[in-house]
Image (cartoon, rainbow, N blue to C red; front, side, top):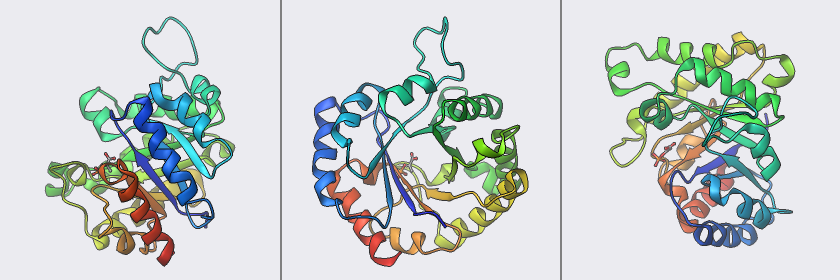
Length: 251
Ligand code: PEP
């Protein structure tokens, strides 16, 4: 298996100064780390400065979204080749906030996954069921549909750069309740099996949704959890470092 990834999604937070200050503290603290792949996902405006700040370190850079076209008359959009140009290695696609607040669909997610692959970047593909879907027991159908649709028509080579982040929507954010490790691991096993059916290979699958220093060790030790995707607990360097250290101790 590949090295577990622990990704911090900063969402719409952090000025340039705050973003560079966080990585300036993070870099020396994880200098010898080779247990986990550390990924930070700042807002677009901080990508360039953060890319410069982490250059030569073992931190990787992700953007939180991109447009499906490489260039053209698309005012206000940012494309995958431009994200590569600025120094990103990954692009997060299909986060539930984008699906719920910005009209992202399985179709647009698939187009963006293709655009990211075309640019030679890795995709962190977010999927997850809502509370309603969990309660009416349709979560497995939903997760399978999201995986199959998102990965449609990818070439074998393009597939090699996809990481899935399973994020139950009901587990994310201030109102979120973290999934139990048993629940998360069972869903992850189903997602991995579906992706393997489409891609013909084992795809790494992260868990996200209210990960914190208290639950990170139990989660990361689950057989089908290949890493963690973290929102709030990664916004302060102490919290993120705490999780990285605790995970490294049990991996
Ligand atoms: C997220 O938004 O992807 C997320 C995992 O957030 P949080 O960790 O804050 O629940």
